[in-house]
Length: 216
Image (cartoon, rainbow, N blue to C red; front, side, top):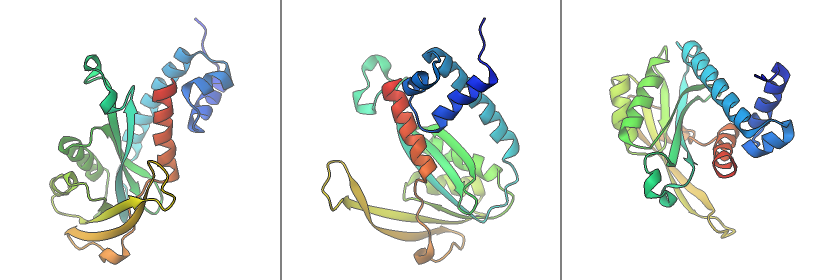
């Protein structure tokens, strides 16, 4: 059975990391679609195991959490009855060290309370000290963080308000304001909080998921 060389594997993974879709990666590298998908699954498992083993005992001071929307096969409103439970909207929960940009914890799931609780507990288990934690105003965070950190955290929500973009471009919104709210412990002054936002790498992840779902 033919196996990819190390150089071929590196070219495929490199193309994916640059934001190319599955089909574009196949065209660029000459690899079959099935080969690319199998390699992604193998590398994903290895990366997951490496992260789980090594990202422990993190000494962070400021951590931000956010959720990145994507979908599998089709958006929720377009999922057929036969695909319910197998396709639809997905959210990647990410906790970033605000200073180093290290992804301390992540989870791909829905946006509900159970997912928030699992995510918060995983984040708490990877930290070595008390932190300043900031999230958006998603209501499920408060109970999840209180339970996971046993109230030993300085936690604030930054509630963002959006409106139509000045260009009035269809489907585009712009953030109009953000208001900080202290929730647990003694977080920094609400006026000095940094708003959790999707970093360029997070946007690349979201766009990559969308391209992979729509073009693969």
